[in-house]
Structures are given as C-alpha cells and as structure tokens.
Length: 328
Ligand code: ASP
Image (cartoon, rainbow, N blue to C red; front, side, top):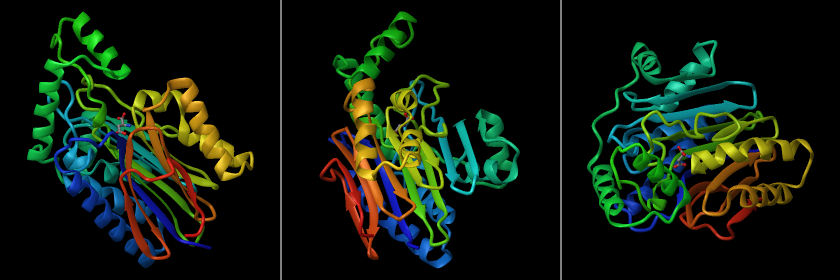
C-alpha cells in the first residue's frame, strides 16, 4: 500500500493576476501541511480536508476567504467531498461560511443528506461553530475592480462570458458589463490515498467571477467537480457548466471500472471534452488505487502541487498537459 496526495489551485490562464506568486507559495505550503497530515494520521479524508481548508484560508485562491464575487459583488461558495468508503457531502451557494469544505464534511457525517444549499446551509455552519466568512481580501477586491474595468472596455472572446453578457443585456441589468474574463476560474481541490487503500477527493470554490447570483457550478455536484470510487479519486476545475455537461470525474471512474489503462482513460476523457465542449474549458487531478497521480488540463495553465518520494513539487503550467506520475 502507498500514501499519495495531489492538490490543485485551479485551471485557467493565470496571466496578469495580482498575487500569482502568493498563490504558488500557498499551494506549496498547503501540500506540505496536507502531506504531513496524511503521514501522521494515515487518513486520506483528513488530508484532503486539511489541504482544502488551508487553500480556503489563504485568501490567494478562489475558495473560502479568497472567493471571487458574483455579478452583484456578493460571494456564493460551493464545496464537496467524497471517499471510496461511501462518505459524501456538499454545500452550494453559501454566503457566510469561511470554510465550505468543513461544512460539506458536516453534511456528510452528521446529516442524512448529500447537498445543502443557501442560507440554511450557513445556519448549519453556525450551529456547528464554524468560523464566519470575513470581508473580501484586498487582492480579490483589486481583481474584481480590474475585471469590471475590462468588462466595460472589451468584447468577450470567451463563449461563457458572451452568453452571460447576452443574457444580462437582454434582461436590461448591468448593460454591457460582461466581457473577456477567461483568466478567472481557479477553484481548489485535493485528492489522496492512505495506506488502508481509502481514496478521498475534496473541492471548493467561489465559482466563476461575475456569475449570476444563484448560479451553482460543478464543484458541489458529485461526478462533476469531485468524485471517489474504489479505484480513483478526482477533483475538477474550470468552467462549471462545461464540467457538468461532460462529467470528467465520473467518466474517469467509469474508465477505471472498465479496466482501461490510466493513460488511455485520461486521454479518452480529454478527447471527449474537446469534442463536446472544446478546449480552454477545464482541468482535473486524480489519484488511483495504486497511488498514481493523474492530471490533465486544456486551459493555458493549472496550478498543482503533489508529493513524490516525500518531496513536494509545485507547477503552474505542468508539461505534458496530460500525465500520469507512476513512481510516487
Ligand atoms: N469550476 C468552478 C465553477 O465553475 C470554477 C473553477 O474551477 O475555478 O464554479
């Protein structure tokens, strides 16, 4: 048996962005912390929750404290987790909880449900003494202002924001507001296996910037933003609507069930994604039952952290763009 862990800090362009260096540092720190936890406790669930909580707390990634705002400048957060032993929980559109991943765990462990949404989910967080969501950090405010400026200046090149702009304009709200915002998806996620063979996945996000209020993406949807079976655990990032349409994490689980070689499995998923929703849409990290680390993305970049033979690696544009790390 083998212990293995991988984290992501989101797929996207990661171009001119305040705080990129801090985001990279955050991934390194959180990978180290989560790996120590995995070694200490030999519990993959504890490790992925620790990893995601660390990223949510940083303020430099789009989850928890650092979450980006919706069209009206409010934050609505999603998160979900799952293990190969059948534990599963998620929360959607919470507005007042600093660590949605801790709340998703409470849903999984303490309620008979899988997905709770909105202010009643926030109440559950309060009842369980989870910390409240503090005001937006300056780095997120800066990014929000920048994106708003771009919105007023340019035409959106990206399908997602074109469609959103058309909707907003045809509804007469915030006329002309939406435009090219392709760099802005950067959810966080973690996958791990402990040497009891338990696989775990966890994902958390503020969603895509300037989303319509009430929009829920892939992150709290099992099989889309997160998934774990007895063969593989997966966490996805990218444009949620495209991820829900193509279900890459569930698809990866199914490929493993049909005993496909990991390389072929991953390649067939990205071929499917390309064919159905196109490129520049998503990325994922996964760990399989042998501890192998898998990643793939079709965006410009994807920030990832992982551990090979006790050493932490962090990459912003990992090459090749689809890869299996065998020798962990
Ligand atoms: N997948 C997330 C969403 O659409 C965004 C992201 O990955 O950054 O809500």
